Image (cartoon, rainbow, N blue to C red):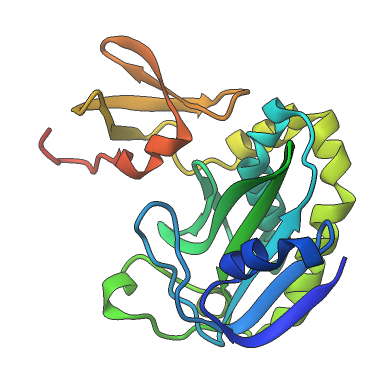
Length: 244
């Protein structure tokens, strides 16, 4: 596993996709500044030198069923690592890390095929030493510095995360249900009333848990429904007093 650092890149994910043939399993690309980083769907990911942004390449990923749960494993690793700084954290399905209703880290996975082999790029952005954010996310983002009052070493954090990811990787494939249990034990959405889209209709329900396939189970007046992670962008917490 190598950690390759750049001062600036449009996107660490894009770099891996373009240069994957020259990279090895678990190699990591990181940069001080990312100018065209993307989140889920059309979202952008704000990142500067006070953030930690990196992408890891996984080659020849086995077992499709467990591979579908890799976003949750990535969230498990990031959550467990950041918790060591003594702040309360939750995992917002499927794989964002929150504290006090604000996002502190985001994760994005992309798959691509080389012949018949599945490769995965895991892109991660963590707000580490940020003190201010752009106006568009000022009310929804926070950082480790703002929560702890301490300036942190991004390289040390990156090394801890990547070592944890690699050392527990095989155990995840052997026992993926343990990761789902971890996610449910630290869930941001469980027991919350949410709205979501189903067949272009807005529905409401109470989040129950993430199931073994990675779907969100929701109790509605029509029974228990499942939400696939591709529809995660439609999920909203229903605030007390809000009108349906």
